[in-house]
Length: 248
Ligand SMILES: C[S@@+](CC[C@H](N)C(=O)[O-])C[C@H]1O[C@@H](n2cnc3c(N)ncnc32)[C@H](O)[C@@H]1O
Image 1: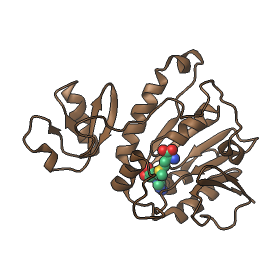
Image 2: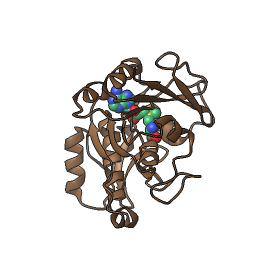
Image 3: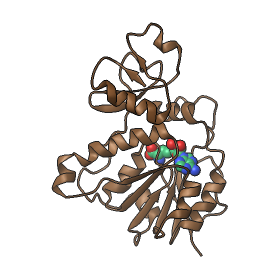
Image 4: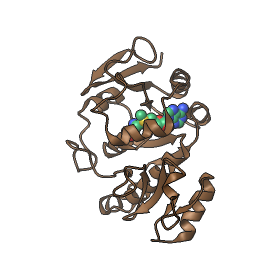
């Protein structure tokens, strides 16, 4: 955690204790020599910083629609993701929430959503984003609940769900095609640097198929082999695929 002489010091201390990470202050000499990543509140948002972002900026869970997404709620269910989730689907578990961008897309389309994230740092960033979402005028006017969030390994947590969701959505980290992809977004690069690849994605897939009521949807880069073998259906997005596995 990095305290930049702004805001409530106790909040920083509390979060540092919760995450069991050191608390640095920007007045400390060479504070930036100790860690590679920092969390700090900037402009009312919890932000993840690396050495490049320390001077300016920071990455946060963005709660606005992505380019090309509708602002209205519920947004039309007409893209590849909605097709993969299925017409009859009402409840979704996003078991790999990460930066929450797919979660928020799913939320805006009007599905009932539970998110799971195992990185305690990412889960804090998500919780901060969902808190900001709950305070948005349109969310309050429509009396919507921000998505629920569980922190922990979805391989274990999926087995504890009281009711099977209609769909479990998975977007684990696949190894990049090339060592350095010029196209990779900073947010995904930093996630990879922070967490590495998700080596246990086959186990996660098995847990998802076990826990779902009807289907598992896996987002994959277009060059990757399907995670669960031949899918029942596949929907093509830009440089990616949504593979659908129906529960038999
Ligand atoms: C590629 S990112 C997901 C990006 C996300 N779909 C988005 O729109 O921002 C993968 C995330 O899934 C999380 N993850 C991978 N395996 C998991 C598991 N077994 N349980 C919980 N979270 C997991 C990782 O920690 C990482 O944050």
